[in-house]
Structures are given as structure tokens and as C-alpha cells.
Length: 122
Image (tube, rainbow, N blue to C red; front, top):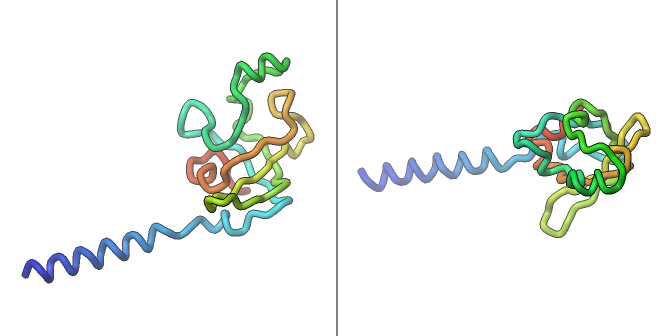
């Protein structure tokens, strides 16, 4: 009886792992020229979009207001797969403005940013 119980438990665990290993459909279809939207991060700051730190923005003459980034539409300019398998994208604003008044292009970890809600497909 123990063997049967452990066999069923093993099968359920294996099926559960396989079901979670799939990546979001948006991840497979993202290419240069696609439009995404910056959302609200789960944490107090953005983790997966590589915005500069507040002190760097202020020293460069920009305004460090991360709340204004919510809802900004961005276009993907470049998609690269790193050696560890993560997709790194370069994004810029669709309205032609700069992020915080100083950076025209920033990079982001696509998979983690989509999962955390920092980026979303339109």
C-alpha cells in the first residue's frame, strides 16, 4: 500500500512540475517593435527593469519619480538571450521622451518583469 501511495504521489508531483515549466505566451512572441506597458511593481521599487538608482538620477539632473513610470507605453528595441537563458530586452518610450529626463533606453529581464507585473503586453 505504501508503494502505491508513493507512486501516485510521485506521478502527481511530476505532472505538477511539467505544468508549471511553461513560459507565458507573450514571452515567446516578443520581438523588436512590440509595444508593452510599464505596470506597478510588486515591491516598492522596480526589480526587473533596470532603472537607475535615485541618487544617480538626481546627480544627473533628472527627477527621480518612479510612480510616474506606471502606465507608460514602451517599445521593445532589442531582444537578446543571455548565456544563462534569460531574455534581456531594451525598451524606450513610445512618446519619444526620456526616462526620468536622462535615459532614452533602459534594459529589462523580460520573463521576470512580465511575471511580477512590471511589464505587461498590450
